Image (cartoon, rainbow, N blue to C red; front, top):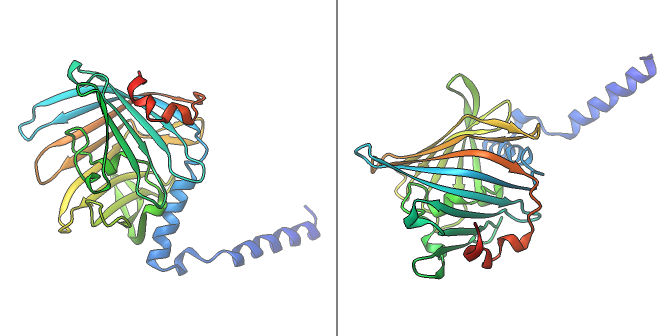
Length: 265
């Protein structure tokens, strides 16, 4: 590298550094938003997925039951993702299906198909905080977590199980949310969410969601093998176990319309 090239490279680097505000100079709110945006940016471009999922429900006495289902996702362009969950086992819930359209700004659209009734039920906006099919996940938890749905605040740098993390708070924009705030741990290396504490409408700790067994797909996209939601107020928990991710299935909008609720397998 000659002297002129070195000077030009140094000038470009200096220009880039001058154009971008120093991370340390941002307010806690700006820094929290930047962390959330970077975490979201790193998951852009996956297209669509289908994954096998087990839902393990455990009551306060330690007794558990398992449901098996499939989850399909279509990445949104200019808006949130679309998801379709279909239940396969046990027999009493087989054929049940849940469809969700996540929106960045507007309230999400959600529908539940109950084969025993033979009809599609729309989930009202003021019911999004209710339990998803008897689990410790709320309906609002079962959507893609769009950055615009929250405001943010950086709390500090912490460690979680030996991993260096950003700790941030996020506050739901939707006044009908069942949460006043959520505290998240985001690992500094890959910007993956490792843990979230959920606080109820009285600002009391309600639930903790833990992510475990992250694996990378297509050399870019990180997905956890399991997500466990523990309810501190009821003593119950629900674990979602994910297996056999498949990307690039060629899904279109038609695979996620309301007719797909009745026909999905």
